[in-house]
Image 1 (cartoon, rainbow, N blue to C red):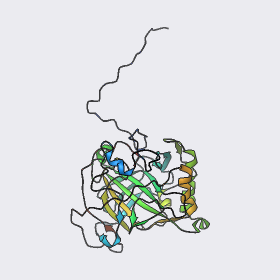
Image 2 (cartoon, rainbow, N blue to C red; image 1 turned 30 degrees about the horizontal axis):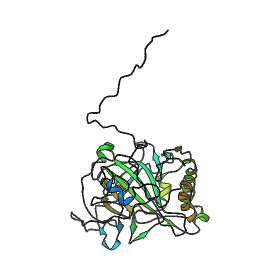
Image 3 (tube, rainbow, N blue to C red; image 1 turned 90 degrees about the vertical axis):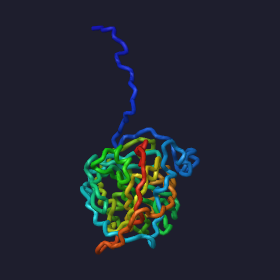
Image 4 (cartoon, rainbow, N blue to C red; image 1 turned 120 degrees about the horizontal axis):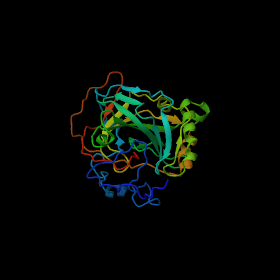
Length: 320
């Protein structure tokens, strides 16, 4: 039956200050930025010029952690990690155009305690690395000016906030920073961490194109990736995202102990992705603007660097 009806749709309507949101794993268009001038014009020194950028604000990340200036804080107690042992929590891996990101099953893996003050749900984790040389340095945070070969960032959001609200709150996001260090001969030991990271890197060859994804079929948990890292010893400060638009909405936890792996495994990340030296330089650490508790934690010493709060605005993309 012919209806002779054509163009049966309503024209798009104005937003009138409404916002459109996306789930944490949704690739979104964003302003072009990069780490190196041969990729684009907006390298780290120019990130501050991006529309809506906070990259030139005063409480930025990453920072150099000076151990002599770290102050013991009794409020930094033990973490409570929920479903960190779930080996089906990683949903898929995607090429962000700057790194590789592992997106988790929504509302499954959580963290609390550790002086955070709120419950957080883990959204994703990703890595920062250097080049393929034997002496490559690629971590974002440094300790006493030492830069590690790699750093893993585990990204979480406050459970009581929407993503939009979290990006506007000084403690809306919580990041766990884990250094990855070279330990010669670690491949021969066939440690669980090495085997599972090797499984993870096997997906890199399948996501060469930006925004391509691959579902994770290997059984890998966050507990496995953290290995024997002492989760009671950590540094704490308030800062920002380390990629544009550098929103100052992050409570940072940087574990003191690194994960140890073989050098060849670390080299797989730049070799397979074609991305090199994907880390932001350390940013100046401002003077503390609030009181710091000087009482040490019993048994374990955790450290606080500073206590600041800053205004933030909405992040335009989710490439954290």
